[in-house]
Image 1 (cartoon, rainbow, N blue to C red):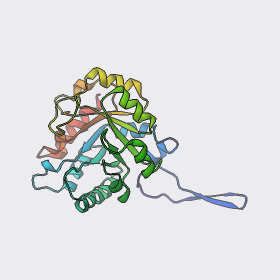
Image 2 (cartoon, rainbow, N blue to C red):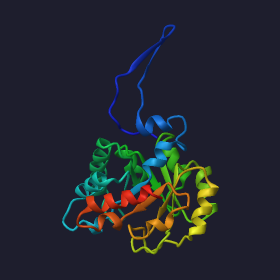
Image 3 (cartoon, one colour):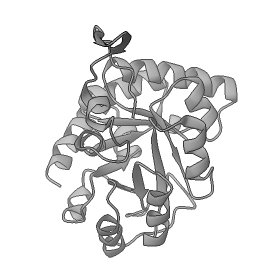
Image 4 (tube, rainbow, N blue to C red):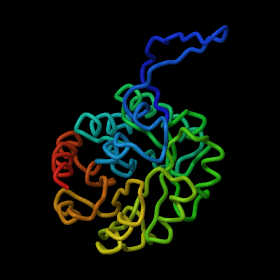
Amino acid sequence: MKLDSAEIAGKTETRGEQKTVASPKSGLEQETAASPRSGRALREALRLYAVTDRHWLNGRTLVECVEQAVEGGATFVQLREKDLGQKEFLNEARALKKLCAARAVPFVVNDNVMIAKEVCADGVHVGQSDMACLEARRLLGPEKIIGVSACTVEQALLAERQGADYLGVGAVFATGSKADAESVSFETLKAICRAVKIPVVAIGGISAGNVHKLEGSGIAGVSVISAIFANDDIRAATKILAELCKKI
C-alpha cells in the first residue's frame, strides 16, 4: 500500500557501475511494502474507519467534518458518494485526499475506481455488486489498498483469494445508512474473522452504545457513519468512540 507521506531524502547505493536510488519508507508504507495483504500497520489503521455521508453535513462542508473526525481519532477515511455528480465527486475526493495525506490517515474511495485513480487515493472499497476485486486490482496496481464488502464466509474467502487487503463485514446491527444491507450475525462475523488472514472491519449500525457487543469477534476495527457524522460535535463523538474501540 502506498501512502503520500512526506518524502525522505533518497539514499544512493552503488553496485558496480549501476546506481539505484532507494527512498526509506515510513508508517503504513514501510510495514506493508513486502506484502500489501499483510502488516500490523494496516490492521491498526482500520481501528476506527469513518465513512462519509453528506446527509449529516447540516451546513458544514465535508472537509470540515472529516477534519474534525480525524482530529478526534478516526484512523481511516472512506469517501462514499452515491448521488453526487462526477465533477463534484472528484473535487471532494481531491480535497479529502489532501487532508488525509497531511495527517497520514489512509484514504479510500467507495466504488469509483477511476476517481480513486484520478486523485491518487490510497485505495478503493468495492461491494459485492460493484467492480470485482480482481478488476480493481488490475486498474489500481499492487500497491493500493482494496477493501471488499462481504456477509458470508464464502464471499470473504473469495475476496481474499482475489487480492483484497481487508474486508468490511455487516450489517452487524440494524442500519438506516444502507437500505439493502444484509444482516450478519455475531457468529458469522467470528467465523469470517477465523477463516481469513486479512483484517476484518465490522460495519452497519455501530455506535458508542453497542460497539462493546463486538468484543471477542476477532475484528480489526469498526466502520461507522452516523456514529461520527450525525453529531454536532464530531470531534468529541469520535474521541469517545475511538477510546471504546481500543477495548475491543
